[in-house]
Length: 455
Image 1 (tube, rainbow, N blue to C red):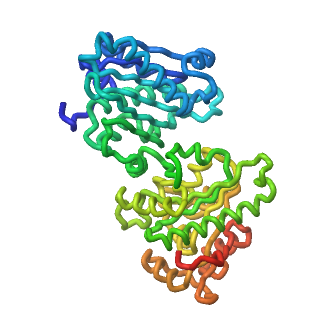
Image 2 (cartoon, rainbow, N blue to C red):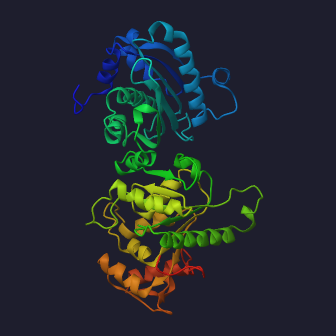
Image 3 (cartoon, one colour):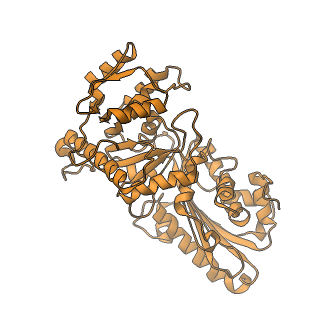
């Protein structure tokens, strides 16, 4: 079959059913019970489906897969994979193993509840063989569902599940073709994939971080999380109910000196937030604040090209090497970053930015918003959001504004440095800027004593 041929879910499921070597099981918890349905309705399912199971009741699920984990979690998904795969091979390996490529598809999904008050998300997994008797490979996804109704969300999960199985058998030419196969028909508008993990011989030579970066750069995710230590997790697990410091920037300099400067500024902002929150984070039950460097897969300026994934990873890994956790966002606007984190936390959010980035935020066109700058600020500064603004050298500030073709800002230097409090602009922008300073939406900060200024 040509790689360029695009098939809908019906034809993908039928293609799998007509593949005499593919045979497997389906285990679906919660709202994810639409995947196996596709293989029955297109015809020829007896050649593909060994069994289907829906462990909808919690006690039944615990009996099958073990108690002690959340029902919609990676831990539960992997328990499902292990049990279903072991049972499939135990029952059929002896009679069919010589000519069959086995697979086990599993998911655990929480779709929109009746009141519309829950987080509609899920985990999807597949284990399969590329050749009969061969070693198994796995793909695991975390998804967020965007459709407004339960029925639509279930339908979208069904299509995604078919995509996963089809892509595993037919679209492993590259990371890009595989992700594109997963995304057909549902991803972007209906489903967001904000985590992917692959393992096994089918993915030999593939890189986990590259896959995560592709999710954002191709618009399949609004953000992904790349920690300094330990395995990657979906953003929700890093952000859930935490007070946050977000440090956005381009971070072009990847040398250790600059990375340590960036880390020092983030640490200083974290200390400032802890001081704001006072005793509430001092071991008395509240979750301690978390800090993240924030990069974007979008151009910083309108005329700049879209960043290459390799360059994004270069900058990300330099920050991670210095001990920094990183969020990679699809959009560059601060209010879009805030909107994403507000999915997972209502605690205080503080942005830590340099003077030049703060000015750039004021000068952005915001052509997609009817209220332009005022609407952008209203979206950004709602719900206990503040901006910590760090000074920078007058020479560096002038060079960066010139590079961004920004004019109209004046300042007073102190020992060659420019702070947020020393900036001026002609009315009406100047009046708005003065108001934000006086209202403490913009908080001028000091460079940590042990750090240099040109971060």
